[in-house]
Length: 327
Image (tube, rainbow, N blue to C red; front, side, top):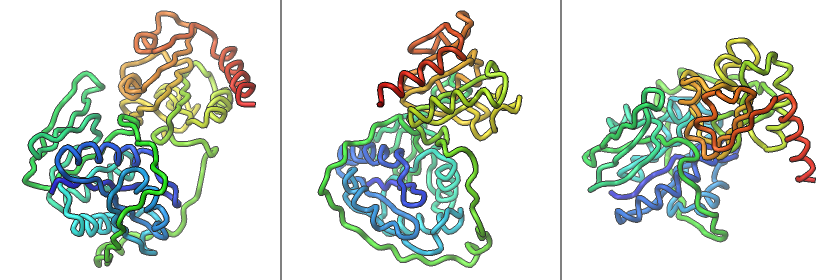
């Protein structure tokens, strides 16, 4: 089959934007191969999201709705997505490259004996085979993999590499309710409580705009000026490994080869010199703005715009100007 199934990642009824980006990609690839883009929604009470998926290009939506799927658990979600795949019989399954996506894709591929490519930056169909490109070795190498059409193809794709289609209001899709039954072993893990932590600022893997800081911030308290800017921009706060190792920020906000690889539309690097491992984690950003008082810092070699300035002076001024413009 030339149809492509996209896993729509949602949390609390809010869809991750990367899912809609994959629907646009799936629509483009499937049309060229004589097929169509389809979506899979997994969760509890997610039927209302079907119209949103249709507006973004899904011609058919496979719905796996069950109380056991209210919160992400690896085994039940794997069983749910496998059930949807068995019902849809697609040639390719696309999943966003997130913590959930990486976990789910590998489990589904193992369960279905599928070909798998993780964290792709480019996808194409060639004679039914899926050709996937990705970067390796801190961005020094671009590798291409060919996933055979003779088996199911599963790929996760990095966020913001592709753009979502503008939503088409009034568009509807056929909704197929998929019967779901937990396997005996799916009950082994239970979630009793999820406690929200942090400042309410987005995670770096989910944001279109990231404001990152390095060890030059000198303390966790000084990172507040980055949080202020990120809040105005509706973005996320990131940090270099040096800043995280120094305890200025939790490692969950670390951007880099040993942290999280991000591809936002805008990346603002404040007081980050640009070590190789950090550049490997953010060089795929659409626009990079560097603020550093060292004009020879390596970050300026990859920056779209460079500001040789004291971040403690420039960043608050930028925040105030943005507030004024928004007002």
